[in-house]
Length: 494
Image (cartoon, rainbow, N blue to C red):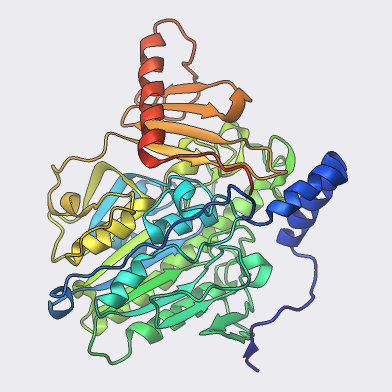
């Protein structure tokens, strides 16, 4: 029976465990007086809470009257950039995801500006850095003043749908503007679960017994794209997979049994934590989790294949811009780390594939230009001939889609904001095509400098080495310029 969205008690979930541990640790360490100050800040409150003035949604009058493509954006959770057969993974097979790359463009240097679920998702929607849109951690709420690219799609005459993981805190789900259909979930703090996950379908909480979430969301996506309509459509399909929990569907439960996992040499099967911290990790063997992670990727591939096949059968595929991306990377023992957040490559790099035969020159190529999650919104607007508003901080990738030789950005800013009690400090970093420079808030860790051309795994910190002073100064200047140009400010309430 469907019912209006409401809460209910249930078993203690991993998210609830972390939330309660976070609160308990705060009470034990900080004491009542200081904790009261933090509580007064709330989930994004306080005098320095982020605020984004509501931007205008302007669409030139002629846009709605032109022939326009459909748009499908598929976002997965924690899917690393190198976990595809087309990227040379040793045993993963992803033929349907490979097809998007093979018939389009794979951005081999694509990144997120904050490697964490909620901030990254808000950046995809708004085209803005976390310090601008305000969702700086998984515990700061969505600001309803934020403008999403879906509002521009709707204003341009599109039928629009957001289906899947929202995962930005607040009082339930937002009254999301610019969508005709809004399907999401609130279970486990918006993380959802792989099996029997209740969905909130256009405001009505609906039980889904016997449903596996990746297939269930795809079924709803197929229903949306298969409807008879006069307008083009824009679908935002946001999967729970392949986030922690790693429960593959039953028919894939033994896929990759016996496979050599090729985990990095510094990975320890029995220490799936970052700095041995219970708040960044999981109480399961690394190889057990990793095998199921790969099985969940195989499930995503299957469901993307269903969507591609249905659109091909209906004649819509080649008139549809398809973008596939991940919301951040993931460590599987590299640097002795698990999870994400840090500024190393395994954490910040994402898959970013674009298929649109009517625009892309030289399909099947890899693009070396650096792409960011904040580029999605301006790219989609540019595709439709909509001027990109000044409050969007990303850059359109349309020139690169049209011309393999188009220039790309030279450098970009990475930012991470801390949240107690997770033991990862505030981070700012600058990445160029060759180098990366990392600073930690209040220098609580040593500064880091890497030559990515000679040291792609970032194993040798060059900061302070003989002969690097000039490079250090140059990278520090680049970092400060990026912070100034993007309006960076440190936000210390998560």
